[in-house]
Image (cartoon, rainbow over all chains, first blue to last red):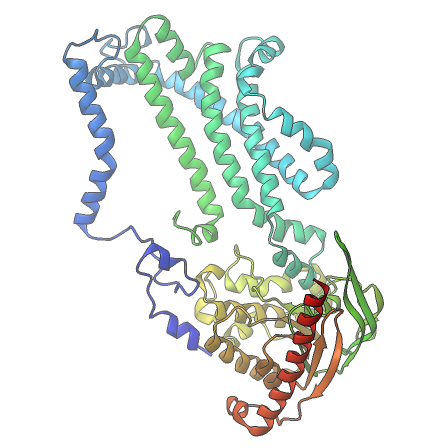
Length: 303
Length: 264
């Protein structure tokens, strides 16, 4: 009876289209693009940096050519100097913003994670309940479906009236943005449960609690994590909006304040910081996802 | 104990376009430790019949009894092997096979089946115990699914086209494997299949069904000696039996097609 197992190890997938074949042997399930040799790695590195590198070089040349006032779009070299002063201080290149980066960044990161925690958490919980219960669905789903079409920025006036200026409206807005993708995706996660798996659980004798904990929730987890990833992305969008409008610290505030003082170099440095921190936050969610969903990674090219 | 009895069983589905009678007047008595295969053209209600015994569906009329008790809901006394193996993709092979044992219902019931490791060994998946289902071939997945059912020690094994999704060679190997397992550890088996050779090779009796509405056309005894080996499939008495059943099934399928085109 080892026949099919042994026969399998002979058929190594040669291309991505073959690797999805169900006869794919476990041992040779390496992702198709990750060749080992140094030359290959060098080529990959070049591919990764080619586009951003070209943009930076073109930008540097254009900005240095004197076609327009340097302050409008400073060259990358100026921005690098400003960024260093912004982070570490010392050169006064960032003027009144010198060495303020850590403080602003921590404020933003804290707000993002606070909003993400309440919005993503509550959204996931409600989404799972909507998926599990027809009563909860009838109670909440219509409201969710209407409110999710209201852009979160439209909540700015009300949240300022309710909460005043400060952290509260910021965290409220960020959480509201994180809430909706979490609801929709976790509901979807419960609904897309494979009928055969449910029947298998029933047949094995699972009671309701076991069915929920051991079948329905694990099956919903990939979709839940997709929702949380989107929530994290939206949280970074909204932290900037909130810090421009509702609070006097954070990278969004830095960006807007520098704009008022015509410091475009600081504006761009703040934008880059937001990009990098947003990217790192996404990596955190992905890391958690991959820890929880090793099995899911094996089924796709994502790994 | 673990005999399966159907008495005048009928099943009507309420569909949007009206009522569809899937089964009518089905009488069937499967003895303890008997291997019975249900064959018939698609749409003859054979899967519905299995779902009634499994408890996934409820009979509209008549009685479905397992071990003398009416079937009310699915449960671990009736293990089901599905066509698409119902392995949980987030559990390893070993965790999948052990799944049933950890459930409260089975802890109370104390299954006397072979241990998890013994059965993994028996189905030849020791090397793959820590692999995920997506890393297995179709045949290996089906062996894991069978192991996961045997480990909870059901009195009755219900199989719905268990090898239908496998290639012909793997299917033939899986049939021998199932025969070996069954001869080692006899259980009451109800196998639904459209493969008449498979049915005749494995079963003690064949239930030939007719469709529209689904009913039992004929019950054929398979008087072939056990243990059975692959060579049996070339024996004249096997071929005669298979041809007889094939003719029955074809007749019914042709009648159903004629009735359909007359209605259209």
